[in-house]
Image (cartoon, rainbow, N blue to C red; front, top):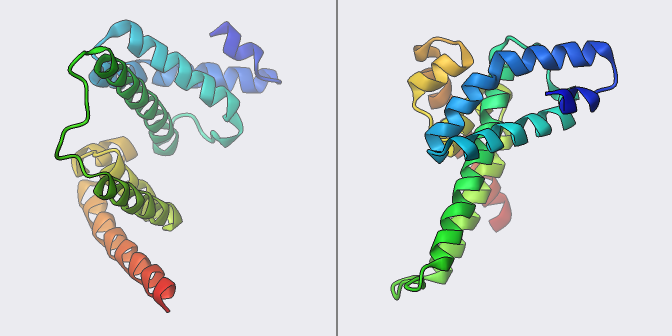
Length: 182
């Protein structure tokens, strides 16, 4: 942790980061372990997450709030998923039977990726009240009950916001599509 503290300018920032570190380290390690199933890799993911947090420390508001918790969870989860994908890719490339399946359709794969990026971009344009919930639900694949706990709001509120957010997302994607075809 000392190396992170040295990257911060003021004693106030250092104290705030130390509080953040001890408040979320275990949670972040737990999430990384669930994904990576390897303690050393999970530790590496958490260290990388804290490095990113230090670099973006100006974006961290209050330490003990749902938004900061979600921010730390999303960072460590994305890092862990990236590490897992790289590890699986390395395993596939090392295996002699590694090859693209015959039924693989490059065009369909590209279209799927474009559609995913389009939806992700549209989610990012939504108001925060819907964006966070839809991001966690659609991209990170959290269940509504998990989102409720993560954000510290009632499950029914999460459900309603997800419904309204999906409607806004659909309206937004429809409008963008109509604008492109006009």
